[in-house]
Image 1 (tube, one colour):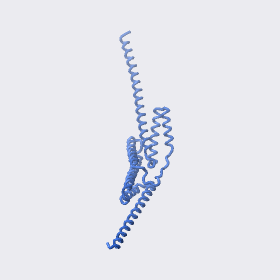
Image 2 (spheres, rainbow, N blue to C red):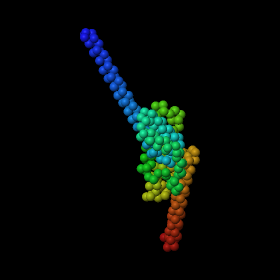
Image 3 (cartoon, rainbow, N blue to C red):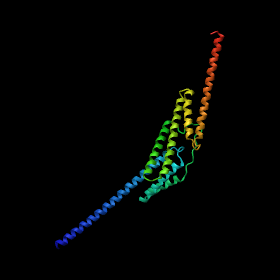
Image 4 (tube, helix red, strand yellow):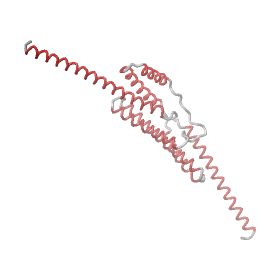
Length: 246
């Protein structure tokens, strides 16, 4: 066997080894890219699902609900396309069934001035709305939604955020009322009423405004009664003084 023939065999072997190495590396790169893509998609799904589940039901609008559902649905489609396992298909199907049902509009709880039970719950809602606004900004920068839609959703989030802040003020006023006189807290309620009235663009806050106005009226009656009792007591004291020539 000539040296030239041996050299050709060696070169051929090296070429085969290089080809195999390239194919293996290419396979690993694609596998890694697929894994990273799946990880990115599922992370996005978890984040949007968290927002959907954490957003206070009484405050979420149809636009916000539809955006989150569509965002999650598109990513489940991509997950199943990349990895059509039975688990992924089942999770996609479960979400689609849930997204298909439109949530019923929730009315303001009768007899309550706030939609929240306490300030902790309200502050948690503030965090969710703030996170949603950041989410909208991110997906807008990525080109997932139009700028016009993002602007509308951002304004809606700001309005909801402002409403929650008013609810926090209302909760603080209710807590203050437990230890302070009506004259002290009625001004806080009136301020909250005015702020909430400015947000009542589509009359969706009518019930809450009614509850606050009713409470303000009751406090005003208590104040008037207190003043009347004080006046009568002062007059009785004067009459008593005249009787005894004081």
